[in-house]
Amino acid sequence: MAVRPVRDEDVEPLAAMLARSFSDDPVTRWVYASERRRPYWAQRFFRWQVERLLDQDATWTVDDRAGAALWALPGRWREDTRETLRLLRLTLPGVLPRLPRVLMGLGQVEARHPPGRHLYLAVLGVDPSRQGEGLGSQVIRPGLDLCDQERLPAYLETGKERNLAFYGRHGFEVLDRLDLPKGPPVWFLWREPR
Image (cartoon, rainbow, N blue to C red; front, top):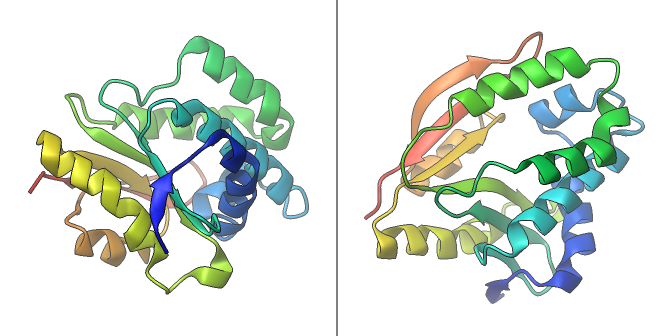
């Protein structure tokens, strides 16, 4: 299946797919504690993330939208005030009353984000029904090729230990690990260009 850039009409289907993809993600479960409402809040978060990164032209999917890789360009990984306020408006009720803990933990993750020019893999997800088919490797490839072509390192975080082997096959190495407050660990990974 051919990989292509994400388009406006992909936003809703990709938000739904990413919410399914991250349904068992420890960090997503920690942020949105309600089992019943988690899919709703996660889909709103991923809609925000796809829309936010779409105009950077570093997001890729496949025609059936069963996988996606959302990258942020150098210096553009951090959301601005307007984007942060929009995220809060979209997802705040899903985090209450755990907001202080979640903000503290996510602030600790953001504080570890390395300085310097790099591409940031903000989200990589494959629909659970399609995992194991190589779609993750397909949709991550254009971003890695861009890193290599532009001589830029790549950075990401993951809350799933089993993802470490996948990312290792693509040249990422673990930089560090952080345990979220009363929550799961997060691993920080880096890849030098080839």
